[in-house]
Image (cartoon, rainbow, N blue to C red):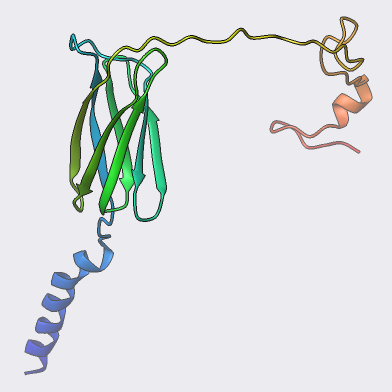
Length: 158
């Protein structure tokens, strides 16, 4: 009888052990592609997903093929996804809900826009710290100081 109890205990322990060490997934993700009306990918467009109830924002930029991937997002929603890029109109998609451990597929098309950028003025103020005479960090170490510094291959000698 005692052997049966021990066997039952060992079997129960072995069956329970994997679930004791496993961690549950508590987040979701979003991925997609940003293209123009001719279906050409838009590289380096800014993608921001905003969790509407809390205002939490998740952001990334698109890769060279127009794809983006945002991970570790809160589940639920609603989310609003906004895509911006210089020379294009802002594009939005709203009421997106994320499911636990699933990736939502969001594909967006952005349209060109006429944008006029104002001139940029660069003002330079001479600073004595930055000059032609200062070309980098300045530290003088003599031979004795170098020998006394500790390294991985030798112990400091004092």
